[in-house]
Image (cartoon, rainbow, N blue to C red; front, side, top):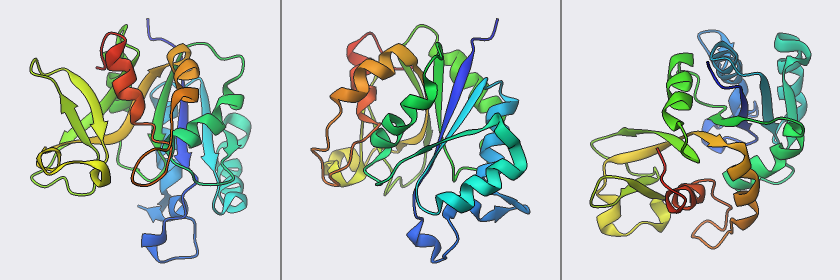
Length: 216
């Protein structure tokens, strides 16, 4: 039987690289805003609750979501963009009363298929956390996946914090996770912003999960 899961979609960023006044997640791919593709993928994968974290251009994003999905999508405000971990902290009140698994998605990843979300949630099994990774010939700019001698994931190092050896790693973190909600609730308060970007990284949960029996 498929476990119930809630989807938290991070969509609060400004998207300065887009060089556009339009919020990044409202830019269209195949005629549809990116955020709508992600919400649809989450729903098609079986999400029983969908929470979109909004910030920059929140009114426009909320209007679009309501027009497309009605009250089947909730929003949570991230008033300041203080990192991905902070964004999920802002989503927690919207998960009140929910018990299960949380899948964290990026609002600007419109090509992620529902099947990948389903497989990721299944891959978590009894682990506290599972993450979706990929490889590139050059993963510059992305968080690198750290593994031990047995090949088990032990953490993620953001590019700006990585050593030269770590920057040579080709496996990178896509920012898509399946996380046990109990683990998430007790671990988020332990995150700090002691890093090169002074942000609360959600990626720090990977090392915490590894210490509790492994990250898938």
